[in-house]
Length: 96
Image 1 (cartoon, rainbow, N blue to C red):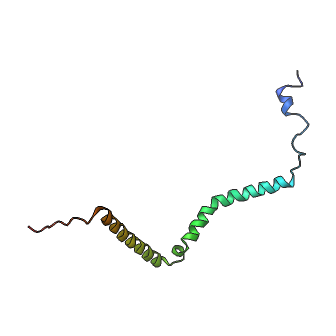
Image 2 (image 1 turned 180 degrees about the vertical axis):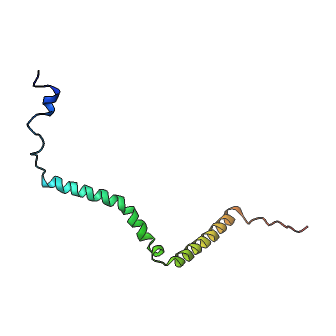
Image 3 (image 1 turned 135 degrees about the vertical axis):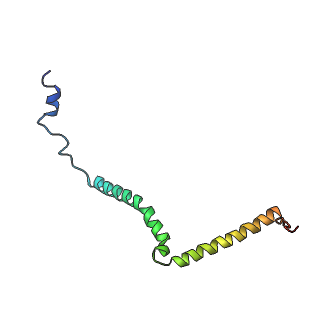
């Protein structure tokens, strides 16, 4: 009973797990997994920077003008579609 006590279990002179050889395939898989994890975290940042590189390169006036033109054209298309679906807008005479 004394040999299987709590202190003897942890003070055992035989080490375990130190002589395990890791196969090359496992090392390659660990490297691939680590690379995928790091790439997965940083990929959205790089995608955002690539999509918006004109803004960060200093050509922000062009980007603002492009956005305003898109907004203006979208408003015209939506108003035309609304008028087509609901008929012409009512006009109120404010003169008394």
